[in-house]
Image 1 (cartoon, rainbow, N blue to C red):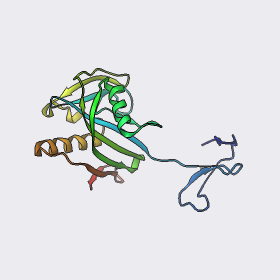
Image 2: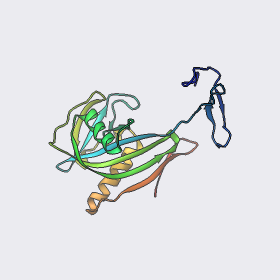
Image 3: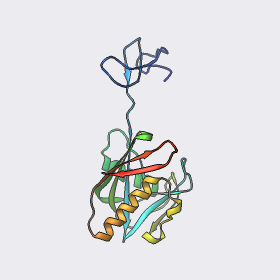
Image 4: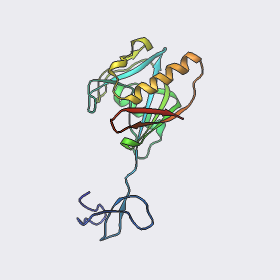
Length: 188
């Protein structure tokens, strides 16, 4: 941080403010403290007639790989609205019947991943501006080796496990990286 967004000062300090326990950007001129908080990712396992809607990413990171429609929540919207909006933005698909499916902490990248099960209203989808293409996949046709992020693998694994049992649960957990950048997912 180079300037205070409250007073414009360039004398920003990175310190632990009195009464706090974390490093923060602080302005000694106007006493403003700037808090950085995790980003919320909201999205959908959107299905139509048993097939799952997936998008091939047109943006970095992992451009050209497959993912579920999801993205950053915006101010002034609910997580359900964010998930439905992202599904429309990335796949021009209208989702309905959103039910909370999974919440995962990703502390190594300061994100919280919230995914819903949803239906596609009319079975229509096409590429949005952040997608190269969209497709509805049966489980056996999902490009498992070409998925964008480990959390997408985890989410789809849980979804298909639940579907085989005929009972959907709400899942929680945490994804961590060790020193060698290996991924470990802990289910709660």
